[in-house]
Length: 204
View 1 (cartoon, helix red, strand yellow):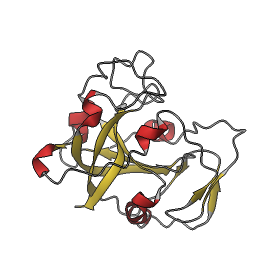
View 2 (cartoon, rainbow, N blue to C red):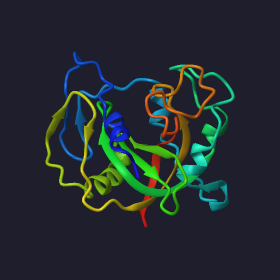
View 3 (spheres, helix red, strand yellow):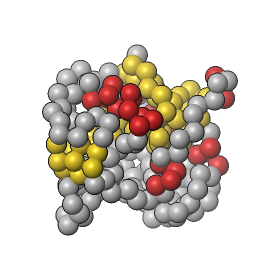
């Protein structure tokens, strides 16, 4: 399970203090969100292939073992290489938060065994993702509306095991500068690779 120090760093604010607060009006609607870092990729509306064989099943520890990307990415990079592939990631929810870009961040660890590695999957704030967001918020006792100027932790009463389907995404906002390693700069137990955006979510 996550150590206390890792949890604190996961929930550490990343947004500058001078940014205006974001209002979460409901599970599906936010005001004044601040999107950045490859934003068009993060809200890619592509839907999963109908051919199940085109979607690779993985665990968080599988993704944690990946190397960094084979090309250097910038804040304007389009999808490259493995980011164009679809994955079905199954894991246990170990942490949950919302960000000032409106995204829901779900941290997943292997559901069985004790292999290292935590992977973040993200659900954007757009109508296409409304039903998924409603499912995630149903795990919490969140009251709307609420305001936040930084990351906000959401408490889960009974963390589920879930499977999410989406494309891989390398988060340069959290990765080491050289991007050669699949580790977050402030959270070495977390992969810089994510599933983003989540296009399907199933509770096991």
